[in-house]
Image (cartoon, rainbow, N blue to C red; front, side, top):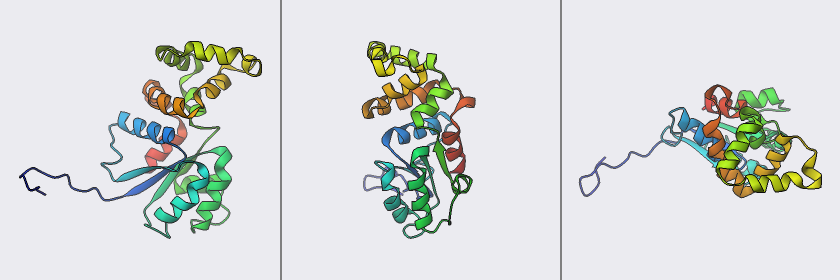
Length: 196
């Protein structure tokens, strides 16, 4: 296709699949893993949709799934949000009484706690602490760790709490993906990318 000045226009990419994720940090992490694998999801026609929270999954499934655009769907969710995802998948006609295995066959994969937890376990606490140090936030992490309710908890729990606020989730998602070994990419990220 040629534009009015004689230059080439990009051909619009046909929407081939939709991946639903709970939040922006999940989208950033998923796209970062895909990029590390030499994939451009948008160029492949895969739209990664930030739901703005798990409770919005039903609305997005209705728009993208069988009642709406009817494109292939997949997604990532926190295990605690599984009932919301299950009900929404059932409501749009993707199966009755879905088990986690059924949901995985559909392309929906659970993070044990959340994506930060998955990345911390994949990388290890020491490496995550090094990433925090390079960002200049080791002092802030130590301050959190000295608080009475966090003092005795394992490093992994303190790291998850530290990385759990909205701005840090977004900042650290690509940084943690960057240091995870290709063979250690958390299962939910790996599986959803294999599905699309």
